Length: 144
Image (cartoon, rainbow, N blue to C red; front, side, top):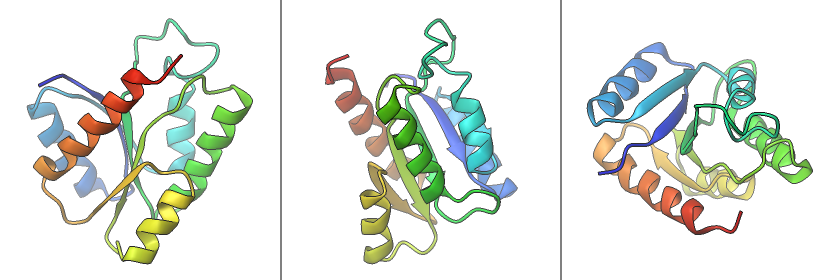
């Protein structure tokens, strides 16, 4: 299995630690942000950012909790997509919505706001990995 670099955006410390531990155990590199503001600041340090092409952080995907304080996942996703549109972020960054209230309407709303996929809490890491793999494959074949 390939190794991915994943940003976990999650305000619950226990959920952060559980996801981080399980994903690291599978060989993935994990970064964590507690809200959308932290996620945006982190993105500016990655190779996705226009002035950081030589950054060692080659982000594969973001898992984004929808409901967080300070800046929620939907607002953060909109900010990321806006930064992509103006060229501050130089490529599409795949985002997987993570929600405890993953009703059909909320999942559709997340997708409409620019997220690429969604998963409901609680979930098993084995349910998340195929989504990461699929989105990473899509990114790999996109024209640069």
